[in-house]
Image 1: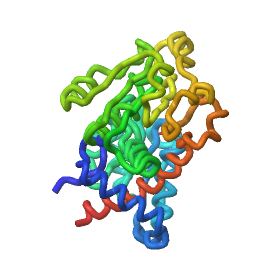
Image 2 (image 1 turned 90 degrees about the horizontal axis):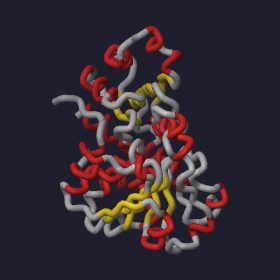
Image 3 (image 1 turned 180 degrees about the vertical axis):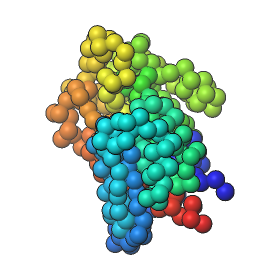
Image 4 (image 1 turned 45 degrees about the vertical axis):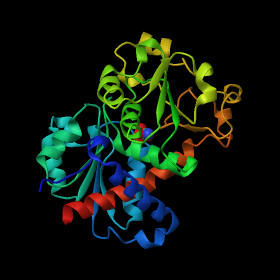
Length: 308
Ligand code: CP
């Protein structure tokens, strides 16, 4: 059987996602039961693009499972700087590691890596395309914060065009019954047509698009804020014009439900005022913490599946 990593959240069934969240919760409750599960195993982190949370949570996840970690956090410090291809780097890493997490600015790079090796490759974010482990983190956070994933109104605000975390989140949350989306963005940063046609329209998921966060705030169960992604703009002037389109403040939060939750994949720039951080509805740093537990569950699943 072909080795299976995780390139796109759509590869996972709802049952698989739910089972992984059960494991992650068990890790939260009984970490001592997992501290040697990956003894003797190595994770490689291949980060061709900047990261704080994803790389460090993958590394913490493997260390907390009793395994070890190798890799690079800056492609310029590897032989990529001499022109080595993704395929050759992946084949090299396969000689040393049992599983790898790859972030790359080009869409499809982790898939190319997976096609050339027999160890599982995890997509840790590829360009504006996909970020499946952020989505697992988001789902696990919603489940822990709200208690369920169905019958929710989810607002996604900011850069919905380049925000790969939003694309993956919409794909994953569309499986749960009674979910409705509210997309808040400037006209230039609307949710892409392919997400609307291939995910939302294809599954008859209700959604609205608006430019006003204030108008929709009272109806939201989740507000998923995103950063305007400077690194994906061709034109600096456009970035400067759009970057502060939405800034969440305590004043605006007064219009929200008392049990709404604010999520953000982070890093943030200006889009959430630091004055919001002390509001109990601000869940984004708890979201970061959850990322380690769900990545532990994913590493266990992929190593077990590919060693079976
Ligand atoms: N959420 C996220 O992907 O953060 P990093 O870019 O810091 O990994």
